[in-house]
Image (cartoon, rainbow, N blue to C red; front, top):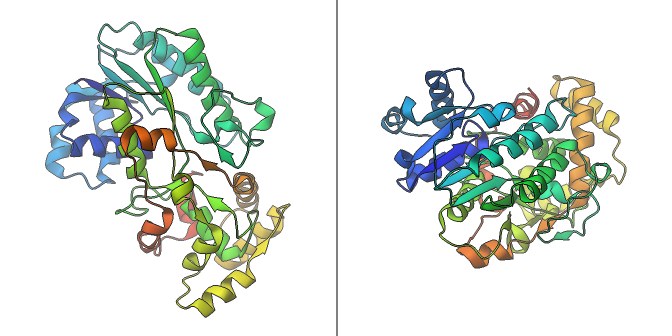
Length: 367
């Protein structure tokens, strides 16, 4: 089996590499990594994989011959070789209206797909999208659909760009053996907690500190750990035949937790009485007062930029107010997928975040 993985210097991509290593597939994998030379790309890859506690011997076993210098904006010029499986995890992940967003996430992915389709051995091109490409107007229980709403119906341009990349691959390169996976909200690692990445977890901590947000206590959050997400991706990449070409990777109905269950855990409540007191003190704001909350946050932490924090609160409040649960029935039936709920590994995330101030942890998403 010959695998090419892009985006392995990121959070999800690093977890995929760790999963491939655990399955004995690392030697069969090449990594498309940014860098002027294979040596530079290898150094970046190893640096990221250390976050997933790769043994030094395993890291040393990855060689420059497995590195493909790669930039998604110039994907059409990449030397892919002729892999059987391509897992495309590369993307410009930003909630800002970045000038290179379309060039990278849509045009770059389309160029990669066209180049990949020329391969003689290619059996699967697995494109990693986002479940949030459904936009802001979907029902709270979201099933897989190829429909991507207009840009105006998205909380941020990023989710629109990811959905449009999928559609353009499907329409412009019909010969590509395309399978699209859309993870929900990926937070932490089931055993490593927030050591590989504190992305998004800082926002959950911030909500507990502020005791106010745009979700009701009865709302649910569809969150799963990165290692469960990676397991599903590798299974769907390597399974010889699949029943569908579009899958949610999510906690789903069975494992999406209610805010009222999670909130007391974030508040470190020890008794039912403390739980009740914490829940009674939570304030739901349908229209979030981001500037006031940002000032409150800075008064509690003494660190940060009011405008940046207000912008973060505004954006994440949009997502939180949707309270989506993404149907994962296809994935469960296909692979027997059993994701962990956030509650199952929350303590580990809290333990690995205790010594990290929230403003510092924010830097995973806002450098």
